[in-house]
Image (cartoon, rainbow, N blue to C red; front, side, top):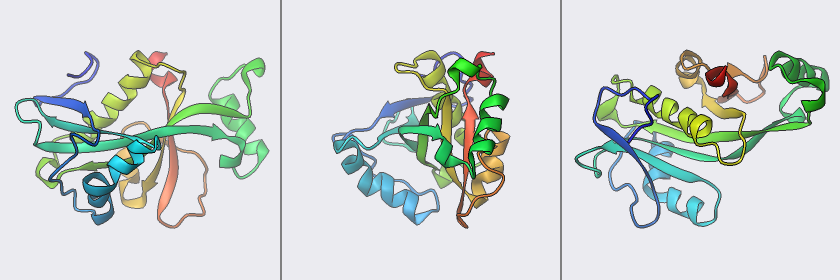
Length: 187
């Protein structure tokens, strides 16, 4: 079930996927995202590259409303156009001088999809709230940021959920690198 901080108007739960309980049916309207959860997620998990979770109906775990795939990441100097921009980022996040490192721990939201049958029910926001809670309330190794390479059409969704652009400009014509500072939930 969800931690108390996660609001959901639907009887949902998250399950960690593994090769024995993969997703059998899912359609979010994006061929690549569908292919990942239906076919490739178990291999990524087998080789310790990412972990996938499914947001399912409490009474019927075969009904997958959404999924997400997470991996370790970092926010580092190389994510910025130049060192000056990175220094401004560190200052903006409130890092004291002795904590100004060359990189900071993060978790990458590698993939996320909401099934067509669940669109418009705020389940995407529920998934993000759940992920945020995992690293604020159950943070096992230290994690300051969530990162995502957001598809351009998904940028407004991530902005609505508190994500900000890592850089003012990105070179990638398909995605934008965004981050969420977990200290926003702690402060």
